[in-house]
Length: 66
Image (cartoon, rainbow, N blue to C red; front, side):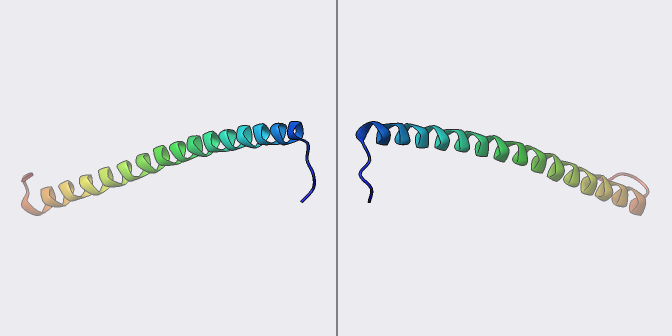
């Protein structure tokens, strides 16, 4: 391994930590936005299924039996 001066090593460590924090924050933000989109998609999917079930019940019996 190369002989690195303590000052350079310190700078490298600080840079690495800053990069790590930055990437973690960006990843968390991306995950949060992905989760939000996923939640909306799943929500609309459930809503459409629910509406379909209600309409099927309504059509079969002639009156809504929820």
